[in-house]
Image 1 (cartoon, rainbow, N blue to C red):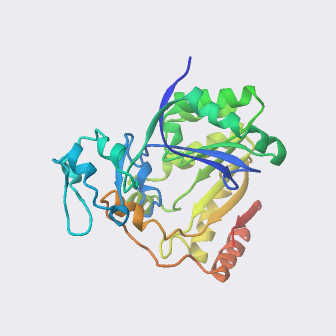
Image 2: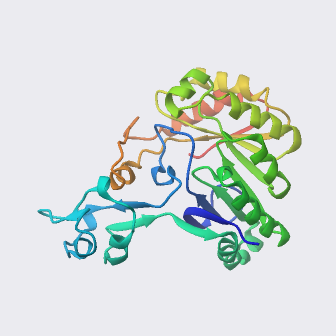
Length: 303
């Protein structure tokens, strides 16, 4: 029997988040509140209206279907989000997608049908599918059913997770997951709590438990300027990583993504910028070297 879940996006022909060409399914909903998150549209577990006034042509269609939330402005329509009950009718009638819906309820079978459309790419490139988010392991029944369907067809599977979930959720997907990508946001639990809303103890404990039973785990560290991207930070991360077990095969340093501001604007959320630029290549290579000097496993970063 198929399982229902909510998806924010399905990215086809991706070259990231695993080997080869991949289909990445972004689950909606997350229990962390990372201040630097570049996917704010995945925060909530329900569909959201996104509004880009730059695309508005003042046609008035949104006002005609919902005058409570929409009104005429000087150069674009005005959307009063606090009054919205998420009926989504405004997005249905918007001709330019200035108003759009992020979040689709789908069955695991519907997702799998999309996956099958790209199966020839997986066969040719050694690719597969990756479940991401948001936090895909918070919709664990949905995740398990998709992974099972893929495993039955010999499709490579990967999960990208912050690992801040009950261990039972992780253990449920282990039999059907070829590779895991696990985030570590900060080595200091109090700083981790300040910037994400939770400490790092559960996350590290879950990664350690996973490492005891799975041997294909890549740790990812999103590098945030001034927060966790110094040589000293790399040394402290390394001390933690060295104790996380033999299943850890690689550490990946992710350079800062500073391009999320427009997404926050479209959701009427506050955007916190830590820099107008990503780390320089020289800085990234320096951090990579500092990390490599601290751990015995492979360290990679995209230059």
